[in-house]
Length: 286
Image (cartoon, rainbow, N blue to C red; front, side, top):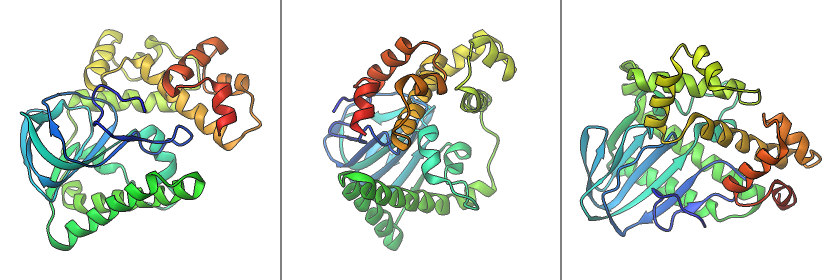
């Protein structure tokens, strides 16, 4: 499986026909080299054994067994020094994950990641056993093939998000406003989510989020690690995968135009780069 530069060694990447989790690395215990990074995806980190010093933004956190850490990804983060720590790491993208974890009348399961941003809880006793049991189920279902395995994985992941929401209740009631940069980037992401299937330009996005184009481009790259158009293309390809999955009668050309690409060659090139296969191959695969 291909790995990103900041991917945990041996991490499991989801089958390309589904888009629930980006990375799932269960109980990895090799020594971690210092490597600071940021990304637009959310991250969940749990320590099973050992420990390490972890930097999130400007905050140093001493992680120990039973620690559950959530991060919104946009603050620079990574371990300090070279230490052995048995941990589970989950990375997921809100845009790709949200359709699978929201339902009418349910609470907003991703609210802690948007508002608390970065938070560590030290779990003990039954609470620690509960989260470790959920992670064990996630590990089991990541390798179970087909739609049954995916639905069991989704249910287990929702259970983990509910656990985190429960841990977050006190923090959510006392939440403080997001930093200005992060709030602006979230506004950009929201606008893209609402309009990615349309023809977008940097000028149009900047005008609608009330920022200068220069400042918008700067803070988006700074906080997400990618350009605005890299993110737009990623969102479009993510939606294309869902369309291929749930409506196998759609042609590649139809999907290309529906998700916002005006040129089929541009769609095919980006799809191959992000998914690892052509749209035609993927359509047959699912």
